Image (tube, rainbow, N blue to C red; front, side, top):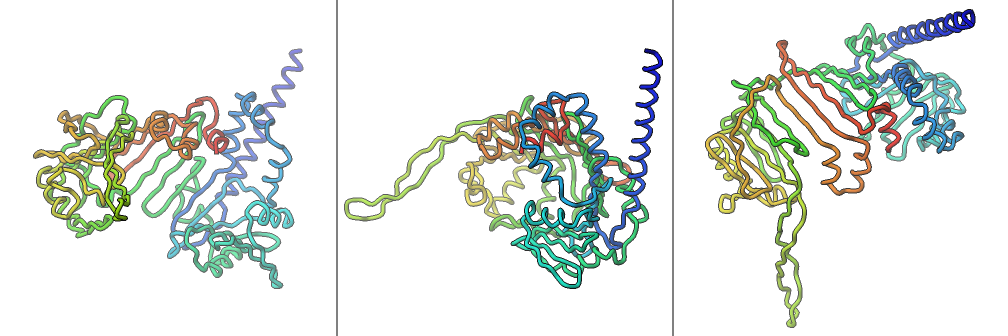
Length: 447
């Protein structure tokens, strides 16, 4: 028996060493991936790490995974993954200079027939065969385009349709390319996170753990300045949404913010702003609105009829640390606030009636008529904080379409801090209801 256990242990250890070696070699290969020299931003999907994380979670929770998988048609699932592409250790998507709204990528083809079937049946693209060996597949809208030959394919994904034929040909032929490890995206090349993104101003990551999605982003502070004193209002315990921001903006940019038919000068706003802002959604309240309809009287004249309607709306409060009375008068002069009723102009925010309250240090907007302005301040080293109780939010929204996407989620928390090297470090966690199962699997299963 001891001999059997020793042999088994040796086999298991040998297999672990073998797989570790394979993963390390594939990681090395991923760092050799070629990308355009003029790439402006990059997204890296670490396929091997995702597989490893989910496989490990599957071994610990076989009942959950296999029970859900047995309910599906295994043949249809197999067809979806049979796309004819060689799956690398990491997949890279990138934008290029001058085309910031379009993401490109390049794939090696394993089986051209399976690949074309996937283009046709899964992606629903229209394929155009060309005699010179390079074929084209595009969506009906034209925002998805694929140039391919028998060995490789170049793809573009965009919201707005643009002509990128020349760029796709250069990507397909790897014209003016460089290894990702030798490019300016060294953070992404070395990262072991499940998803990494990097631009000239950002570098961040996302990891799908058991029961949670952890994410971070580091960006240049730019026009963001720390306040003279980092204080925020004490918000209610157990709110649906709590948010506060302690930050100033650099003056002198002379920007003009456009909102509907209203315009506000940044310099004028900063003159009154004191460096802190908070938002709170506590629960739902009942608000009575006037509804205007028209009817015809006995003389066939159109007559206005006013009726009252009660509805549940969020109890929301937005408080701006500022020279509140002066800022209120400025916004009234721009037409955003009606001073007679102390309400926000209905044309700027038609969803709810929003009341306005102010003093020498605050300007408050609220769906509650007699909202008390917060008076207790709390000191914090953080730049911003956001907490969303997604279970409460789902109940209060009462929108079936959105509720379906929120049903597996529990809580979102985000923190931000200014660092000594003049950068903003954002970190957060999206928590799911089931804390034992991998977050990505839960999210995809719930779609």
